[in-house]
Length: 66
Image (cartoon, rainbow, N blue to C red; front, side, top):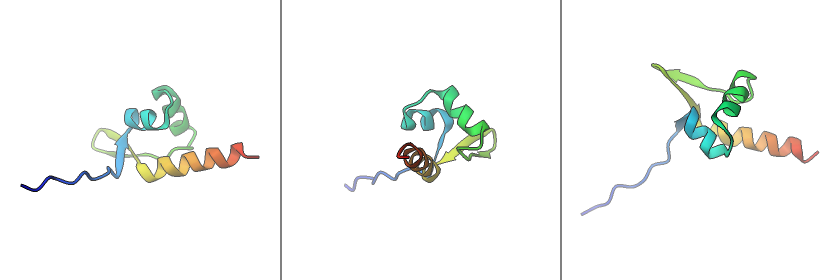
C-alpha cells in the first residue's frame, strides 16, 4: 500500500499565517492593512501565499540588520 505524500500548501488563511509567523492574528491583519503582507481572496476566504510569508520575514530580518 502506498502512502500519500504530504504536499506543502501554496497558501494559508490569515490565522494560519499568524501562527507560522509567531504573531497574533490582529498583528497579522495590521501588516495586511499596511500593505506589508499581500493577500488575495477566493470566495469569502482571505489567503496569503506561503512565498509571501517567507518574503515578509526576509524583509523584516533585513531591516533589523541595519
